Length: 509
Image (cartoon, rainbow, N blue to C red; front, side, top):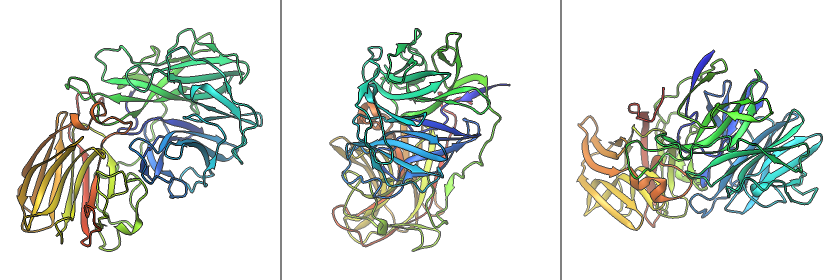
């Protein structure tokens, strides 16, 4: 049966995907950088519909992120399954090392990390006849003992690539007696591509595919999907082959071109030609909608647009900036509400401010919350943030100004900090939020039961990767801070809403 893949299969900042199959179940992981918990884990039964079942790195002992720079932390995990155990290798750039964690259940718990005795980034594993090969960037490889992390061989460069530069995301597979090595080249920007080579020996020599690159959208003018690369192959339980890979959706209509949602996860079909080489999506290019035969659909229940904060634990879609201080967060202090207690850190610090964040997944979207907060000092504030990194973020918040309680819209872009508008408010709770389109965030507030009042707009562009830099995407969330002092007044959030507004130009059904 022919159907359409609707890309991305994971919307928002979910880059560097790796996938493995266990029977008729599929599991996928992505990078998480400076956010905690780390390495989100997803489950699917059809490679199209995914649900998050947890994170691999849920303890500070597994993931120390103190003072992690923006876009450092966890890079490019690879997930594999072997003889009843899941193996996940990755790099903590804050510590500068590769590691492996294991679990018998992909939903956790996962083990403490074992450091691996090999440099490079983007580690990957191949289990082959009792041996385990570890391959890292620049196609460096060794035989490894995963129990101790020690190398059992010297490190060897097994393939020089095609000359595209920045060789990363290597994955070695054994398929029909051949060892296939796929690698991303050209950097993770608009020159990104995936190339492949093969050999009858895991150490080479490797012969390049004559139709490399097997996937790239560089030079594909007019295509909103760009920067395709960093792929991982998987054979489905029906024998078909697929590739997951990263890419970006450019903001439609904005020039120069920018993107704010981060690098997302996409899917494409793979066929094998008569010479035994993979062909991705028949053309070596990918798009937001691709017709191809799909596995039988297994959709998951649709997640609610509103988080009522009536559970005892937070949903898996919520993350913190670096390692959180647990005493600053509570779902029990005021049942049905999320309570945040501000620390001395702010969103502009390379620290762990009191905040909860989730990914923005659509250019056209709505987000809002009901906040009950009466600051007891002029340093205290709480509100909603649209956050790219510590130098690029927007807030709508409740503060004290000249002795009056106000709602305020503030923008931080590089060294520029601008308060757009302040309006005195008499009562709380107050609803605060925004609607977004492809060019602006439109911020508002409303007294309980009252009409929404505009606080002003802020441009999408200044939170883009092209302006702010880095490897992440825009996050939306709730925060509280004492701005240099620990806050004594708790901020209570009754609910948080996020929903897609209407279909953007680059969204395919």
